[in-house]
View 1 (cartoon, rainbow, N blue to C red):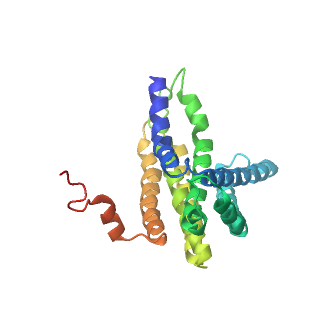
View 2 (view 1 turned 180 degrees about the vertical axis):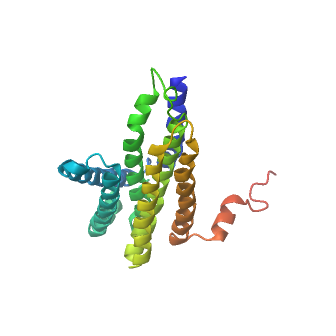
View 3 (view 1 turned 120 degrees about the vertical axis):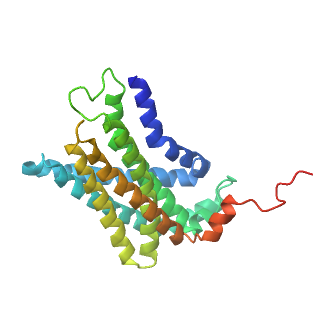
Length: 259
């Protein structure tokens, strides 16, 4: 039973991100490099947050303290990664033009939305992995939670929130990079504020138990509403229109006709 729960929550959290990685990133070595580099910048933000948490001894037991500064450092390093990419853009474009790999095209680096997507996705995947890896380790057995009054919904809540944050980081990356390019600082602030808000809502989960599991919905529902809104903004930012959506789902008459 514990293994079933382990694999179920693992597929919930990383099934869709794995598919996105395989179909949109894995076949392009330059995108893989960007993906790994963005994950490294997220790890740097985690390192700085950990140093601050360790240095401020009186507040070590305050989860909210660590969370707030963790979000701020993540957004700071997102900005630093943006600046790094813009400074290295010419070099990356030159490398992509000189490579003989048919999957790498200069278009990847002339289209800044692709770079933003890969960067945000890298942030999300490494962040999601660190947020749930300990939960998955406990989930694999030999026992499970729920017997001593803990909520039996803790595991799947963690899985769905991990998935949500991975996708949110992807959308935040697209919006954040585009907003900085256009000097639209309202969107930049919107990314930081929404990240802080959704992260702080997860603090409600520590109050949940088997008798008041409804508290989990106080973080899950707003998180997925935020994901829907950010997805719409990121889609519009990247140049998407309703006509694009229609073309993606509607096959034109005669296109796939069999003679």
